[in-house]
Amino acid sequence: MFIRKNAVILSLLGIGIAILTASLTALALFQLGLIILCVLDYLLAPAARHLNITREAVTSCKMGDTVNTTFTLHNSGRMPISGSFRDIWPASAGVSPWQCDFHLKTQESRSYSLQLNPSRRGNIKSQFFAVRTFGPFSLAGKQKNLPSGWQIQVLPEFQARKHLPSRMRRLRELDGRALLLQRGEGTEFDSLREYIAGDDVRAIDWRSSARLNETVVRTWRPERNRKVVFILDSGRAGAVRADEYPAFDAFVETTLLTATLASRAGDQVEVFTLDTLIRGHVKGSKSEKLLHQIGVKIASIEPNLAFTDWQLALQELNRNVKQPALIIILTSVGVSSISDGLLHILPHLSKKHKVVIGAVVPDLPTPTVTYARLTASATNTPPQQASQLSNTPATTNTDTALYYDIAQKRRELERKTVIDKLIRLGAIVVGANSSNLPPQIADMYIELKATGKI
Image 1: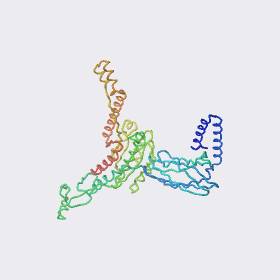
Image 2: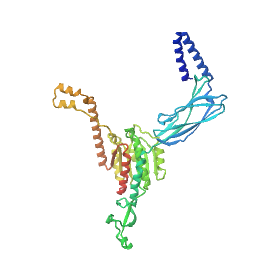
Image 3: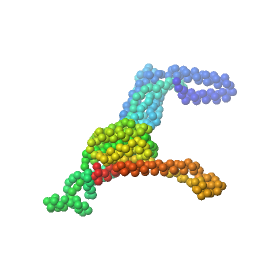
Image 4: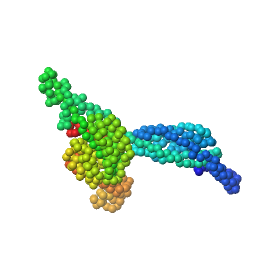
């Protein structure tokens, strides 16, 4: 049973009547009559079991997209039904409108639409339908929660897509369509073309020029069918907050961008996430549906606070990657990388593969710190003057800001120490904030491709 707003308004009206009549008996009789009407309204309200609800909606969408859900309500009872219903979703689903009113005659059906605008990736479920049926006096009614069992898989938004056109142009230049080409150890001969002023004379093919009676140059293209493996850290490093979302979301954006480039360049892509287990594995994919496959596998994965088992990653790579490959490890570089064992597996990886570590480095605001107390004690300032300095508005919460500043500098020093160790062990480290990490990793891939190092 529930009480409607009309009953509350009438209850307040009874207080006004009691004040005008100066009689508590009138108030009691009025409220008693109102209670009797509410109980009668509840008993006469039709049961929700006579209401059949069917839904038509998609089961998958992209984060930020608007999804339309259509409900069809059918009254199978012998009397009209008036009421309202709500489709209960998590707050991140962005349901609008939050409630729909209905009035159905006997054996009548009507359709109602709701819109969902999910703001978080993953699997979101409709918990239940909350159906309310009103009595004939519109004072009270019955409420029942009907099972829903509906869920939608929200795929990553892929905001880094805006960087794709410019990086694709650079890839096309590497395919021999641009004038300036570099030959590296990982490039192969593509074709001959006519010499153009500005070309490197070392690229001239003299034998072919003599045979064709015109000056021609060799063009080279990066080798294809290389293996590019992405390892996304879904342990503690992925759970670190980077701006508004966990760092793992930046790893997902980076993977989508660089994996798309690698697939367009003719390389084979393999993706998996890692904490204590290997999750969301996309293996050996080179198809046009690569982006969708990665999104489906990673959409429902959330980072946790478990330690990442890097030895498990080494075993997986040794089992599946037989030829030299580009290994892109996406994590948050810090002291936890040492305890998690990342430094221990790097020498084994660097011997055979090219290793790139993409690290999310958050942009932390640097507090304005006034060292009044510290300076006063260091310069033997009299206590009265030191007290005046400490009581000025500029030195409010000086100790807290000072400790915050020292802790931030220590964390930066620890991060720099770990990065130096990673570089000495043969890894290429790319550190950036969550928005700049995807394009910088993509640029590193193109650079390695252009210089023939993969």
